[in-house]
Image (tube, rainbow, N blue to C red; front, side):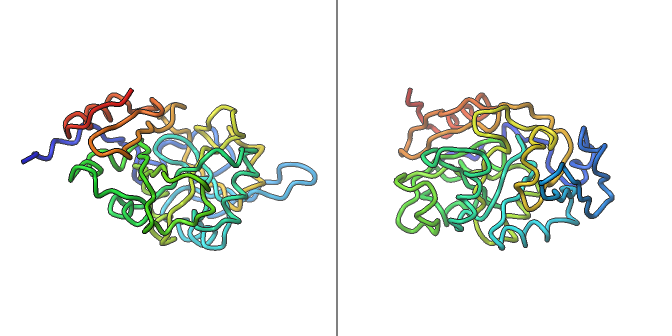
Length: 260
């Protein structure tokens, strides 16, 4: 019998109280005590609504997601654009904002590890593996399967889907409240530098229904580690990201072999 190993890594930047301590450059524009701050970014641009990524503002984010809007949110790695993964219109809007090719797939974010089975096949994975990898800075690539509730319009033609459970309370609360999966991608123009503060993507604020400020994220710009777990007993690292060493250590404990 395989014993459940001790959790090897955990990102500490997770709670709303912790988030409030990392208010960086955005603090000169946004007070975390404020409920809403509307900034006019120039002639001809609509105002951007900036909110703190605190429990007080989860409802606004959920309402925006349910209305098919795109929001910008902090995660345990980078700032990202998020929308309802089951709304074709919202997903297309993310592609427009980023200038991203429609052939480039989007990952999804769910609130909790058990939610993954609604959107992808997990039966072939060793029991307990996902609980050791997630929540955390890891994107798991799995087969969708016929039972997936994801819209076919999300990443058309692909049988697999990248899934995240970020170690960040705010975005998980939004996903939980939306009762859906969130399409999630980095908050930047496609191919440009990833964002660790809201100032990094200031020119895109007007394109979002809401922008949530969690301060300057301490994780760097590497993003999540992406690992393909489609094949039983095997794994392939698709992107090193910020947690490759910890991720591969867990995979080896569970007996998975790397495909080069």
